[in-house]
Length: 302
Image (tube, rainbow, N blue to C red; front, side):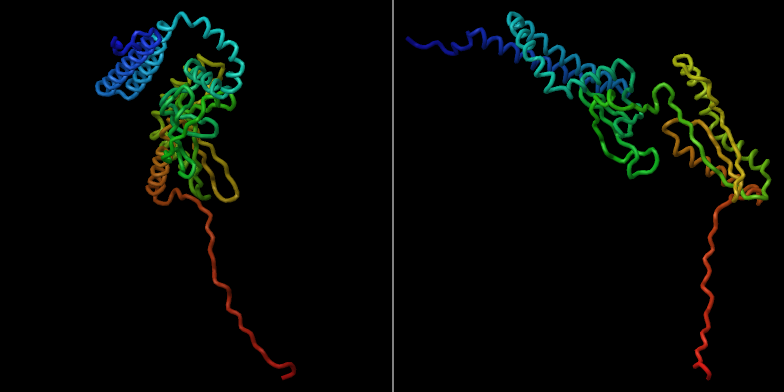
């Protein structure tokens, strides 16, 4: 009597495994197709990123559904097993659990989002991805001066949001206060210097001041914070060497370095245009040669 071919396919356990594999494969293919459509059709990078992350999350959730439906009669025993092993699993995976909890806190608590400039765990950079376990940053600074990328991609565990402060440079108030100091020689007209510097700083950072004023009003409505002056402020200190003018102003968090360059260029042009009425002071050190020494050697009593 011949043996029927592929009799193992009639096993209920094998059939369930086959259905699970086919279901998960179909879901993965659907996720890949949807992500490719989003990548090719959506031009806005922020919308494209959010849609791709949403599709990926829904794909993971959808993979659990066929497993739950096919093995639903065994879920009761599985629940008891997981309950017994729960304490050991929680202890062994405490860092992973903390990172997942951090991801939930970041997603729901508004700590930061993709595109924000933050400092996490001593690392400063722009958020380029928020995963379930880690946040990915494009790092700023270190051996590079100013708020410029240094090329390193850093991944920080989400559990850091519970352990250390989270500095967000672009969240509720995407502006920073910054200042520069300008030394002017004594003997120059200090009123002319004040008027010149006021015009320069107003012309360059004036638009930031008006935008920051609106953002600060919204901040006052949301938090218990007092009113702050966003218009440029110039203060003067007369020290032992020169008159020191300090320019304090509000600037967009990504334009701090370029705004300083624009201010210094405009100030130097204004000083040059004053034809000597204004002069930038500096500490000058003049090194001179040692005087010549003449030594006359004569014998004693000669």
